[in-house]
Structures are given as structure tokens and as C-alpha cells.
Image (cartoon, rainbow, N blue to C red; front, side):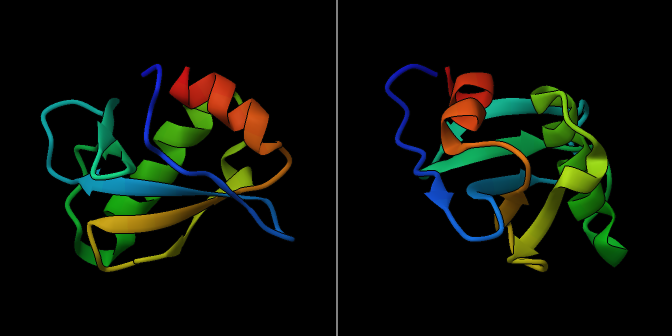
Length: 99
């Protein structure tokens, strides 16, 4: 995803990553850039926060961090979400997910 338009934001708590959710997908994976967000496909339905949990897990696995280091912090009921990643710099997140 070289030359990506995804803007990471450093905050006091960690790095905020904009994510576009694709619930009820056939396969869980990071799709790529979409509308300035990292598009993440998950098999879970959007009900009861299950898709949010699955998105956090897919991102944590891709980054090689514990699941507790990744959480959906904004857009809980929207396709467009703000995911907070703790314990990593924005450069590390960019290298792992966006390079």
C-alpha cells in the first residue's frame, strides 16, 4: 500500500488509525486503503460489537501485538471507525500495516 492516503494520528493514549469496516465478509483480512481508511474485512456481524472485536483482533495480529493493545475508540456503530493502538509509534504502525 505504498503511497497510501491513510493518516495516522498520534495522541496521548497511542496511535489512532482510521478504519473502514466490512462486516460479514467471507474472509478476515486487511483489504487495503479505502476512503482514507484502512479497510478491514471480518466475518463477524455488526451486532453486539462483534465486528468491532474482530477488527481489533485482525489489526492486533497484523501488528504482532496483544489484543489488549488495540481497541475501537470511535465509530462503534459506524462503518468508519477510529482504532486506538497503544504501545507502538505511528512509524511502527505505518511500517507494519501500510508499507
